[in-house]
Length: 210
Ligand code: AP5
Ligand code: ZN
Image (tube, rainbow, N blue to C red):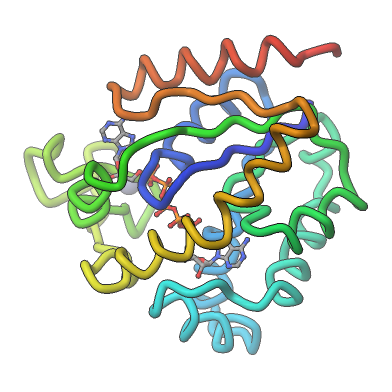
């Protein structure tokens, strides 16, 4: 089962992909996470990617594809995966369609007005990588492992606005193509995490022929 999870920055793709993968035993492939890992490791690719990410622009596709192809070779991808953050425009959709078969594309639909507060309030554990929202935290440490929490470098108001603009200009027209292919499912994203999760699971089940 190969699932593509679509949605604006902050719609909850990362949060939901983790839950879905845990339940369905699928591999979680986040191009954002792969890029942040390359930045952290200080690789040549990471250094190139960093300036685009800090502006909220797309990283050139060749760089993203290189990381994605490496990731797809890992054995855990054989049983299926959830792709979070790729494809993001028609060019990327074309590139990925040549390599993999997508069973269902689930769009987490949410108005822009809800997203700024979600993103400026996001905290990520530097130790275990878990994502939280500040409204759910009682201390400044990770509730799961006690690690220090950080704010992503692209979660500032200016960069968030750029990311949203790019989503509307580049990604939204691409989403229409999944509709034409007959594999698009839309789930309401402005709801609590469990409700969104249940919506996504139902959407996936409709396309599960395995
Ligand atoms: P990426 O890391 O993919 O960022 P994004 O698409 O902007 O999405 P986010 O990770 O910000 O949000 P999310 O939808 O995963 O939300 P989350 O679950 O964390 O990409 C980063 C950058 O990398 C891009 O800008 C680009 O430069 C580059 N890049 C990546 N892929 C690329 C590609 N294919 N091509 C080119 N460049 C690429 O949730 C957000 C917050 O909301 C959290 O605090 C969470 O706790 C909270 N939250 C989640 N769900 C709910 C809920 N139901 N109710 C209340 N709060 C919630
Ligand atoms: Zn942690």
